[in-house]
Image (tube, rainbow, N blue to C red; front, side):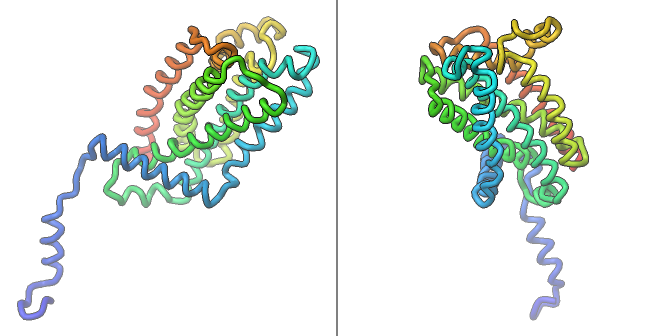
Amino acid sequence: MTAGTGAPFGSEISALLADRQIPSHVSMGRSVSQALTMAERGLLKIKHNPQQLFDVVILPIVFTVLFSSIFGGAIAGNVNAYLPLLIPGVLVQVAVAASVTTGVQLREDLDKGVFDRFKSLPIARISPLAGSLLADVVRYVVASGVTVAVGLAMGYRPGSIAGLFAGCLLVIVVAFSLSWIFALMGVLMNKASTVQGVSMLILMPLTFVSNALVPVTTLPDWMQSFASVNPVSHLVSAVRELAVDGHFGPQIAWSLIGALVVLAVFAPLTLRVYMRKT
């Protein structure tokens, strides 16, 4: 009871809540701002737990050194001659593999109830999901930077520095679009280990049955047919074209179109399933 009036204290609270209008729709501008805030949260998680970058730091080093040592002499005669073929391939392989972690971490956050707490906030429903995926762009940048740095240390010399930089941007864009597929898997599947296992089972043939490590002509006939239409092969070819002379050929256009199509299909689909599941 309030002093001197006898009016219930609860009625005052009800009146205050009635005067406060909680928006049922969040504008596009606020949604983007909230997604960026959630992305900052993801970056803080990386800052406080740098071990999350372990795979995108170690994997490029292992892949570059291992594959160049194994295949360099057999395919190109020596390691230095093989590096222009290898570095774009490893660049794509590592970035695509890093996008799998998006789905795994999303599943872990869902299991911990993190997204349940976000539901109580007056924010756009897509912002926690989009923010998580945006934060993972840092992982793709680190993976690309480490791959290029290791290649340069081993003697790799691209024909066009600007073209190589453009190739890295292209890989990051494609990896971000693919992360929506793995985010969908993270929402649909019940365990993070299941997301990890199924994702790698899909990625293994895509990344290795391609032109990433060896010329397609060296593969068996049935593998050549698959590698020729494999999106990973087109992306690797696009990065090689850019790194050699900065040439923007049709492979680049197809890679960008493919990334936009994946984003247009899987971003709303993932959001719909995420909203239904949460």
